[in-house]
Image (tube, rainbow, N blue to C red; front, top):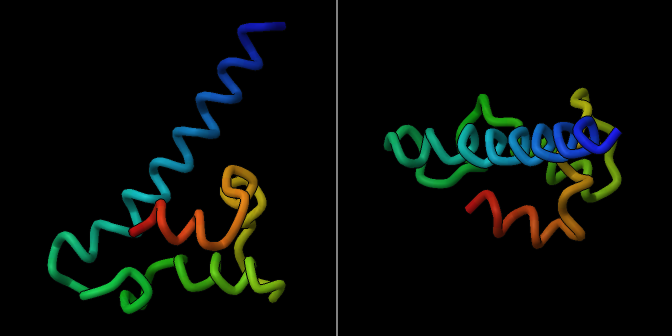
Length: 77
C-alpha cells in the first residue's frame, strides 16, 4: 500500500531528526562542549557501532540512513 510506505519513510526520517536533536541539546544548553562529552548521550555508542563494535543499543534503524560514519558525525554536529 502506497500510504504505508510513505508513513514508514516519514517515521524513519522523524527518528533520525530526533536523534540529531537529542544529541545536540546538551551542547546547546551548555551542559557539554561537544556531543561526545555528554555522559548520557548514545552518540559514542553509535560511533562504536560504526567501528564494528557491539553496543547495547539497536543502532540499525538510524545507521541505515547514513552511508558512512563521517556522514553521521556531520549530521549530528
